[in-house]
Length: 121
Image (cartoon, rainbow, N blue to C red; front, top):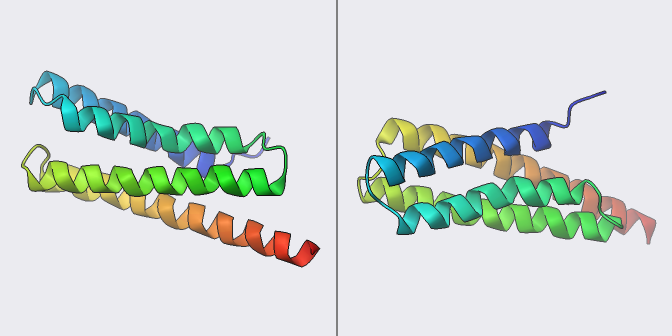
C-alpha cells in the first residue's frame, strides 16, 4: 500500500507539536500560548485524516482548506512563541519550515482538486 505523503507529514508535524507543547508546559511553565499551538497544530492532521473519507470532492476541498487555515494559525503561534523567547531560533526555523512545506503541499492539493471540480462542470 502506497503511503500518503500529506497524511504522513501532517502526523509527523503533530507529533513535533505535542512534544513542543510538553516542553513549553514542563520546562517553560507556559500554558496559554502552548495550548493554542497544540490545538491548531494537531488539528491540521486531524482534518487531513477526515478528508480521506470525504463524501465528495467539495467536502474533500473543504477539509483540506480547514487544514490550511489551521496551519496558518499554527505558524502564527510559532512566530509568537519565538518572538517572546519561549522557543529558540533553531527549533522555530525547523518547525516553521515543516509548516511552510505542509502549507505548500496542501495548497497544491486544493488547487488540483478545485481544477478537477471546474473541469467536471
